[in-house]
Image (tube, rainbow, N blue to C red):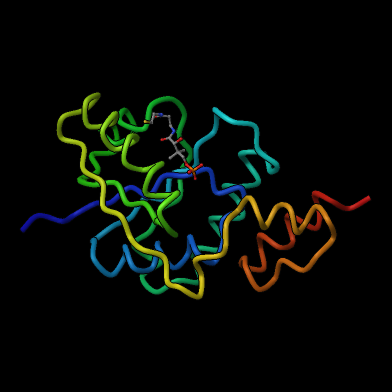
Length: 163
Ligand code: PNS
């Protein structure tokens, strides 16, 4: 069987412990995983360069990190899948709202690119309450984010909200 390459796309604003768990589980199943950080689209709290830098440091914490690469992407996900020659896209789901979000996205991506495949990982229950959105809110209010994100992300959030 040929080496399998998975693409793990997202905004990663910032990367969380939930994301790192999905990455580690993906690395256990695939030969290589590219974590692809969307540049454009919605406005983000952390700029693209910071999100890339934080993720590059944070992914070193997971088992199999030597087979993971972090990159940015712009434009359509299916174009990046094609350009990088990825076999499959991986995404994490924490519950039914995530599933409802993923299903039409997968269907649209498949209609744009017939070979498109997505594999969904269910979040571990103990990590399922972590979302980058809630982490940003906690950070904005000056609360502790260390239980939910790797130290590099916590530091970036502290810098962002430093007076
Ligand atoms: O972490 P997120 O914010 O849920 O990630 C969403 C992301 C970046 C994976 C998604 O918005 C995406 O693929 N954007 C790239 C543009 C694109 O291809 N849009 C069509 C998807 S149906």
